Length: 249
Ligand SMILES: [Zn+2]
Image 1 (cartoon, rainbow, N blue to C red):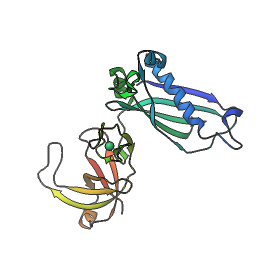
Image 2: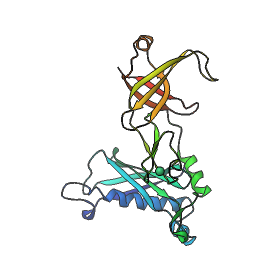
Image 3: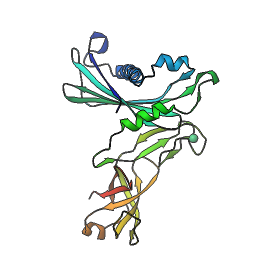
């Protein structure tokens, strides 16, 4: 797993009157991304010299806890996804053992000479992703979506290229909240599943895409299923990758 660990003691230039000046996190993400490319054996200067660019098309940061002057910020940076011509770099910021912020930047691999036209990400970068994504224990909330920045199409499963207009969408994780639309009991299971089980169709609260998954609920709750009831959608790690719809009531 190739990640880089960076540390930085906060100085007067980094803080406002109270705490870290929020946009600074993006500078640090940019800095550690450059360190990461260096660690992967492909310094940014070499990438540029070879005629490629890595412009950012999305940058987000969530802030969990304030940090201030004199604090030592520590963060880990790794490539968390590679699509056809875009890739995500994830950043986990900590301070004194606390998680203080989490950032993600999506970059596009481009051919500079053709006016920054997106081109396939190189194999070494794709390989770095494979190694950098550890098997998650249990399951993660939500599903991986893609949103097209050109036409606005939201897709699940996430698309590497927008099926409507061909632009490169950006990936994001949805929230877990959903509502049950309809359901059915499966008696003839595919390999790897034990029948009977209940397959549900749900609507995510924060994205206009339907998702299909196995309902996890006690027998009594299964008997009391009704359209519109709240669910939590989680993606189970590893195969077979069927979503879990947990009855939350
Ligand atoms: Zn589109």
